[in-house]
Image (cartoon, rainbow, N blue to C red; front, side):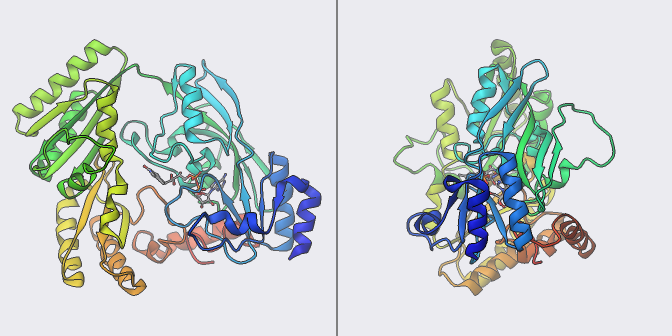
Length: 458
Ligand SMILES: Cc1cc2nc3c(=O)[nH]c(=O)nc-3n(C[C@H](O)[C@H](O)[C@H](O)COP(=O)(O)OP(=O)(O)OC[C@H]3O[C@@H](n4cnc5c(N)ncnc54)[C@H](O)[C@@H]3O)c2cc1C
């Protein structure tokens, strides 16, 4: 075991290879010690390539980590694994304002990339709560979603080109910078969403969009899911595709999320069944505000909205989003099982009703909260399981995931599969699909060194 670590030290230099306490403490205070044999922090693509070539020759598992904000156990290590961190590869190499592209190393945080784009009057369209720590490499490896998918798509839509190091150390450079490129297989797509199992992303060319100076945000209340779904179509049409977010909070979530020392009085009393955070952006502030207000007014006339408040300034806007982002409030549900699922909007009501009944009969009493990116058919569900028993947790998961296939849903909307959802992949993927995933894995990583056991068992 130490032979490989010695070889890595010789190849990368002393300062890039860590062992002992630094590795054991990697999971943070209060967490089980990290069992990896070494933590590597290479500072270049060439160093990543040398690392993988050596690990592949030794047949040693490599777990790549970005900002470690992933929510499905994708960076969990086993005894003797090599942990590969990209934290020394954070450089923004080039922004081309005319082509609206950015070339960046994979360890850069999403927030750094967003800020660098904004400084050029451009927008990095991916946004999510963990932006300060999550990295571009992690966003690509998980095909992250977030708050603006309804308008700009998931991370896949923000990537034009990739540089990836394959398991044997080969550097595959597809640093394409154009939107259209139909020259055979689009190889970068293989790696987007592959959760570190097919290659290590080292650099990317990102697609940037024009930064819209005018932003309008409203919090509205509605009385039924049917009304909320009708509101989604109505507002999308009224705003001509300029809606960035349509975030829905069931009353169960809103009531908890409005509490918190950092939050003031709720903008709307917590008496309505549903709350929707709607945001749009555009180029001309006065016209945008007028159109946004008019759209909400018409929605209200049509009975799609029961109460509405508009953010008058950035502070109020941040306050609305703070409610939506206040997942810490869910602490009162502990021990809790948290889900990130997709359900077609037309099936949401019946799916939740049926799932609720099954959970109630399992748990006796049901306490759960529901919220999510409804415009993307993405629900987050948190279920209080009452007592921390693995078998009970598994039964709860089985109920929530088990009903999804019948309605055309998915066991993972945006967080990926990692280790935590591996047992449930078959609810969303057929046997031939999983078999093809295994074939691809074997072709690209024949010695099974890259994040082995994640997504599916090897
Ligand atoms: C508060 C909070 C809010 C969140 N909100 C959202 C949200 O709205 N939408 C959403 O989609 N996710 C969300 N997430 C989940 C998480 O932020 C995303 O999955 C994110 O993309 C992970 O990035 P990371 O750099 O932290 O990756 P990590 O957690 O470090 O790794 C995630 C996976 O990617 C692999 N990986 C990381 N870097 C590379 C690389 N360079 N090459 C190859 N593989 C790599 C890892 O092996 C692992 O399998 C949230 C998380 C938190 C904590």
